[in-house]
Image 1 (spheres, rainbow, N blue to C red):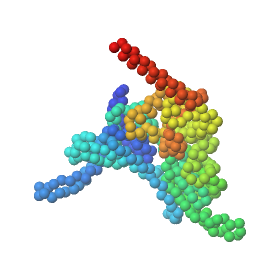
Image 2: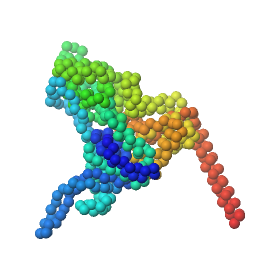
Image 3: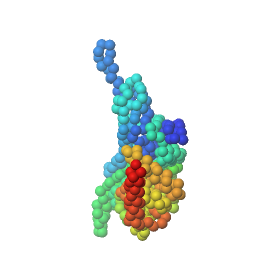
Image 4: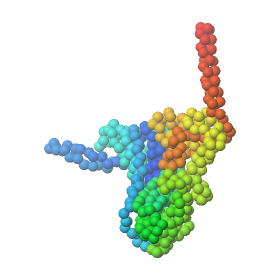
Length: 429
């Protein structure tokens, strides 16, 4: 993401001009833009005009429109699956960087004068890469939204892990960046059961076909030449990953692809997982091999912290709280050491609800706690969403029932005081 222009005063009033460049930028915009915001972007509108003879003509006009957001929709790219033979790539070919395939649609009434479109007319903006977009927040920019803009504009981002989660005859190709897990492709090849007798040729032929298709898919969908790619992961149950890696090395050597051979030897990490499904990426991110290589990345930190929370929940549940109400109670007592919160909560359509989460984040940060913002486009973020989207690891144990009882007593005492003040006021009158 490129920051084209920014003017936000100390009260949060102002605008930001951004230029999205890839799928992750679209995801950032989806998290930044809220209902009620004013968004200006290029658009194509069909215009009808009536000629002097009374005939109606229709034509498309390119223009910049400003709308007041009523709905924001994001869809990530689908992962096509294939089992057919694919066109072989030439020897020594290098993988190209993936194109932007995510879609972001912003709908709402037109909010500024335009000679082609009436005020209040409904329009949907289809946000495109390398096209500028201006965002102005009517209620002002809060600290979470501004932090998201700064994070989105950090240069040199991109996919940091290319992963192939495979089983016998199946493989899913994934790209992991700071905020997204993108399944770029899937393949499936029927594999007959391995026979113990001499008739294993059908099995071997099927596996050879699987390896050939996997190789072609790999060079198309994993950007192994990208400088930002830190690791190439082959994950599987059993020993499938060893066979896949050896087949990749052999084929790259046969084709004379020195770039791929070097990338495989220097960046490959082989990880055992319990199943050949994409959900196993959570296990991948917790593996010691990956943690050591990617300990500074955001998504690895998410996996480590979530794993720590679940372990704490099993060992000392008084130091592992989750749910909005309970986490707020822990925050009021200054007990939070690490706050786990999903970006999904900040997309709440109710601005008051969003504001409560922003104030919660700012409050625990002021008390010295660490805040880990989870992306709901990662498996770890989806797991956190199943726990209401918010959780906390406490610095000291607190009994939920005791704290809730204290809160009830405090409310009852406050109510008694108000009743006493009311009675006293009536007596004076």
